[in-house]
Image 1 (cartoon, one colour):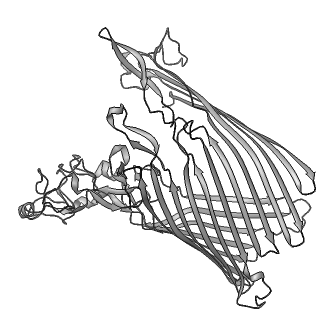
Image 2: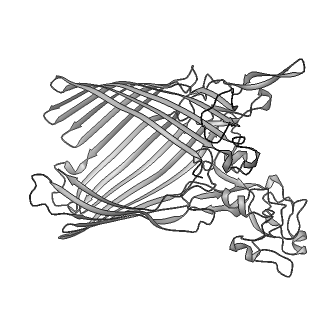
Image 3: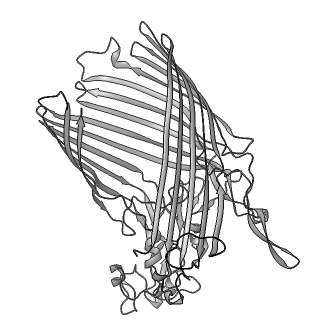
Length: 589
C-alpha cells in the first residue's frame, strides 16, 4: 500500500482582539472580535497496480479524489459592566450585544482511467471525470441582545435577574426571534445574627431560580424549501433538472425550556462536611423534530415544533474531609436522578415512530419516556410441536423460531404486538472521587456509574441473528441453541437457521447500560524547590483514564456508546472511550 497516496493538509487561522475601557468609577466597556478560518484539503490516489484487475493495463483502473473544504466564522461582541458598593449593598449590572456568523464551501473532484500509475493530476481531456461537485453551505447567523442585574445585601440576601433576546437564521423568517428571561434568589441564613456561632450546622443557604432558555440545534437549512437534482421527461427523453427536496416552514421557531429549581447548601463541623441538594423541574415546549408528513405533499419528513416534554429530578453532592492531618483524605460523592415524560405531540398527540434507518424501534409517545424502545418482546422459543399449538404464533412460525409475547391477547403474533420495552436514559448517575495527600505525594481515584437505561445493539443483530447462514465462528450463546426436539436448547436461543424472525427487531439485542467504572486514577509528586528564582513549582504525575469497567453488555464494546444520541439510541460498533496512560509534568516559572 506504499503506492497509495492519502494526503490531508489543514491550515487554520484563529485570531481575536479586544478593547477594554474604564469609563468612570465602576463602569467599564469591552468590545471583542474574533475570526476563525479553516482550510482542509484531502487528496487520494490509488494506482491500478494495487487493484485486482491490474492486468487490464497501467493506469486503466487508477483513481484519484480531491476534496477542498473551507469554513469561516466571526464574532463581534460589545459588553457594558457596572459594579457599585454602597455600604452593605452590592449592585452589579451588565448589558451586551453580540453577532456571529459562519459559512463554508466544498469542492469535490474525482477521476478514473489515468495514462499511467504515477501522475496524480487530472483534467477532463485525459481522464474520465466521475465527480465534479461544488457546494456552498447555508450561512448560519445569530444576533443577540442580553442584560443582567445583581443585588446583594450584607452577604445574606442575593437576587439576580437576566434577559436575552436571540435571533437565529436557522428558523423560518416569521419566527426567528426568542425572548429568554431568568430570575434567581438566595438567602444565607447562617449569616444572620441569631445563628449560633458554634452550631453543628455552621453554614446554610437556600436557593431558588426560574428561567427560560432556547435551543436552535438544527441544520442551517431546516426551515428552507430546498431544490435538488432531478430528472424529468421531455419528448420521451430524460433531461436534468431540479425539483423541491424539502418543505419551506416559515413558522419554524425556537425550542424553549421553562425550568425552576430549589436548592439547599449546608456545612457541618466548620465545613468538614458539606452538602448541596437540588430539585428541578424542566418543561421543554415546541420540540424541534423531524416528523412524518403525508405522502401527498411529495415528501416523507419535515422539521417542525411538535410538542413538549418534562424532565424532573434531583442532584445531591456530598463532600467530606475524612482526615485533615499530615495525611489528608477527602471524599466527594454526587448522585443525580432524572425522569422524563412526553407531555404532548402536536394537535392530535399522534405517536411519532423513530429509530435507526426508519426501523421504528423507538417512539415519541404521550405519557412515556422520551425515545422509548418499541418492538417485539422475545419471551422464548418454540421448542416442541406442542408449543406451536400452546402459544400464539405468526402465520409462518415453525419449531426453533423465536416466540414473542402476545401483547393484545388476540391469539396471534403480528405488528400489533410490538410494545414498549424500555428507555435509553438512565434513572441514576453517580460519581465518587477520593483524594489522598501525604507530604509531597497526591493520589486521586474517580469512580463513575449509572443504572436504569438501555441500548439497542444493531451490531449484535447485524452479525448474530438467525438466518445469517453462519456455520463457524459464532458466539458462545449458540451452544445452547435449538436443534431438534431431542436437543431443544435453553428455551431462549432459537435455531441458527430459523430465518422467519431474522428481519424483525426484538428485545434479544436490547441491553442494560448499567455500569461501574474506574474513570481516572492520578498519582502525582510535587518536587521540592529550594531556589525559586527560576522555577517556582514543579510536579510530575502519571494518570490513567478509563481503566476498568464492570457491566453486563454483550452487544458491543461499551454500554456508554451511542451512534446517534438525539434522534435514536443504538450501538452499531461505536468505538469505546480509549484507555489512556499519561505521563506529565507541571512547571511554574
